Image 1 (tube, rainbow, N blue to C red):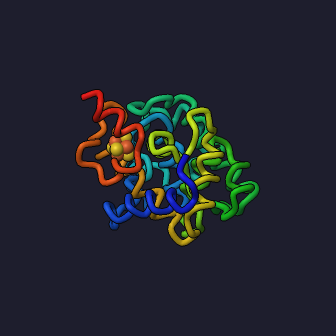
Image 2: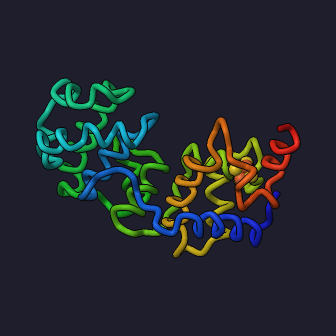
Length: 215
Ligand code: SF4
């Protein structure tokens, strides 16, 4: 296992590779970010970005979605996996925003996770990307990288991975670190064919060294 200093070094090395890493969902307002994040569960950001321009032209505000039925939303998101449930969640989330939050996306983890369809990971993305509030969302890329680098153990939960990284990294680096690790997971430490031979973290990565020994 990497200790805190080694974990900080590893994440900061990844951040140096992607100093301009930004959110890849095309969304302008906190509400659009929340809906886009909800749609992105088990779907690619590219596929979400294809449907949201027309979706947000048809339904501009939480009040517009709150008045709609899930069946009215479904045709706009049909190309996205789990669209049936996601349409239900978007309408229910909008209704709760209108009834409990004056139509605005709230700014705290507790309030965000009280919204339909929003779990801890989605809430962390919304906090960071919509409001600049330090939060570290652990997605599938970050889980894989953390386990390969031994920032976490194989059996560790996403919450434990989040704890290990946020303990090691200053709060000011949480949002950028999250984005950089996602880019790194897509482009270098990919699920099927990680580019270990050219990876700057190979020297501290037992998984990468085992891959190289095997090849
Ligand atoms: Fe991922 Fe390979 Fe780099 Fe390790 S050496 S972090 S497995 S790409």
